[in-house]
Length: 253
Image (cartoon, rainbow, N blue to C red; front, side, top):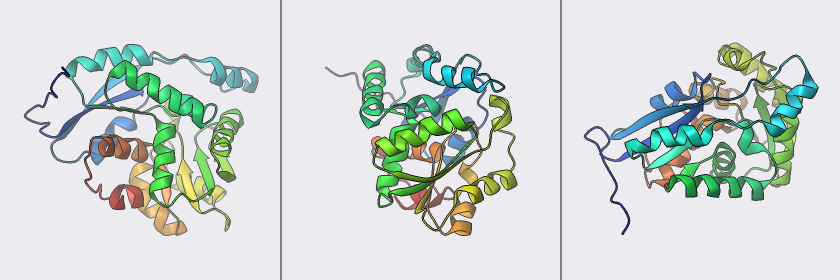
């Protein structure tokens, strides 16, 4: 017999586990701001090996081989009996193609025993929800080797990456220090008449609350990784609340 779901006095609808890198300071407050009534978030942090930013060959090698302590972070948060997991770490889930992404999500879901939302699947589901525009412009905080991996992922999934631009952060902490003006300038770099939708990858880049302003400025939908991940975690639990202030996907789908 399946174990009955555990609800708290403050979480009469759901508890969501949120797993982030130890250096990430954006996912937690952004997902807390999106949290609907009767839902609580419970954050667990995972260590990641340092990724060099002054040696692109070493940077690229790290992207291909690094393995963070995701399973350990999951073990630490599962005792609070969450109903779903939202994974707030982008780059690992955007490696390879759709088959690999689905297999990784299935592996993690089997490990957790509850819905487990990975960023790459969340962004793809977000694009589907808004009508599945095929020509996208992608903004990241990364350097070219990471941008190439992400572009290859979307291409393998049937999208045309018309433009891609990385803000070239000098370390994980610096990602959270980009200003709204710098982020808007980054989207200026990726917007062209051919782009049908904007995409943001990089969970420590503070984009979520800027989404309505970005969509209004460019006249195009934005699928941001943190909004999409939290949105999909709620939807997989059957929670259909609109999330005002976080753009077309969160408010209308």
